[in-house]
Image (cartoon, rainbow, N blue to C red; front, side):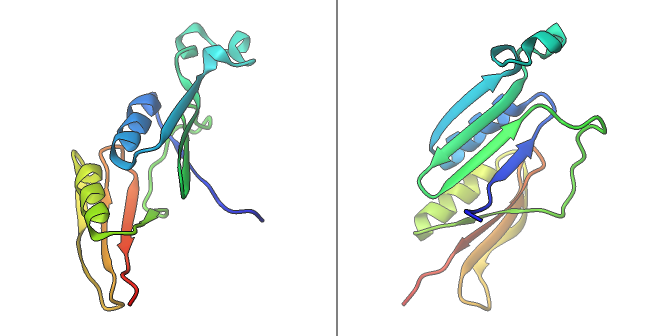
Length: 137
């Protein structure tokens, strides 16, 4: 196994959400629409601008996303969280503030019993995030 990558599903607002994540986290963002793909001819016209595949890449991580969901539709849950590990206190505080805009801060940033600065939030798209900074001595 080479690793694991997070893939987020959206209900028509993938472009908006992934642009928000780029603005919060930085990195290079690329989109492929349904209309730009080989499957374009098989899809209804209303789907042509939907995001087939989005990729946000920055040193240390890759976040993928799409507007296409299963036949059951989009179902949000709290079983999965994305954890971000930071190099500085300044970076974790700035990212927590940005990601929590329009969302819900579920766990404020604070030093925990294991000695790390840690916090959690659910962003305005319903994605759960954990943020972690541990200063090694």
